[in-house]
Image (cartoon, rainbow, N blue to C red; front, side, top):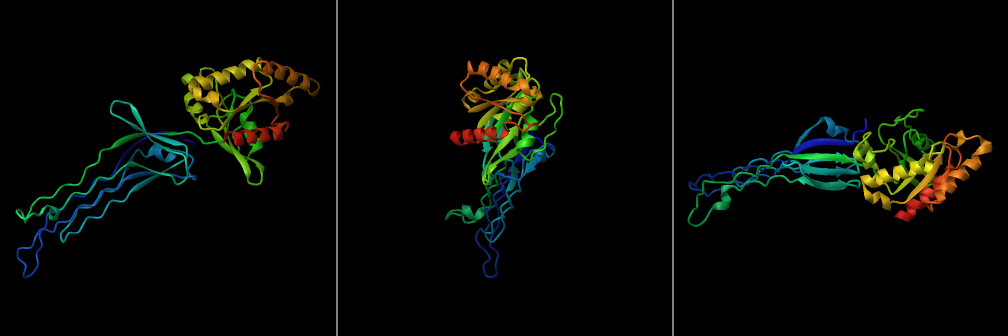
Length: 337
């Protein structure tokens, strides 16, 4: 199950208490203080893991607590420090702390494998009474307690990391395109909102040359305001390097469809306006062969009046125009780096 959102509570380990102890040995009846320090509490650490691709583990487990440090003891022995608790998360995870007033503070953005962040530092250990001996107080009978740690409420938001983000209305052919270009096997059917969660596929160009494409569930008008679970879908496009607008050639007004999609992305995050993009007319196999060239030319000419981007005409089912599209996308990715 793909889970891209979760709320959890974490608490770093408390520091161990310092010890009050005095040296007791034969022939030394009045030994000095020898209480050891408490150990440091374990920290809450986040680590990027390429083998984890969902926040499923954090949807059902809500509380995570690191180990406490142990108290000090006599003979100046310090308590053992608590073990850190490492939370492994998928790349693309943003972590926010939810404050008491409801505001959010961004603590981390996990983007690289094995990248680590300390979300909550373990409490320091308390000082044993051996630290407080002075010429005028040679037998201190006090020590300090270890630091207690408060619980933090965190919000986890996963945004898929891909090179190409597929953008289109429901039933535009995005899932079919991804299944043909990669080994991904999304659910495909001839009705709207077949895809209900994002999916990644690796598109191979040549040996050691490939890119990652993300199939985003269909966008509808008003998605930037959350309509049709728009926010849940749109955030996965934010991290992509380039966009591929997929427009059904059978649309009543292909240009208006493209403008609506572009507007929804801009209204959600105006930085989307700066992303490189390609426009592809899909499902050209549904146009009779004798009428196909004329229809493609008609739509291309309409687009040419408003954008200088060349239109790619493709059919995933008929395997038409897919190779040129792959190389166009790969070239754009390289240029965007």
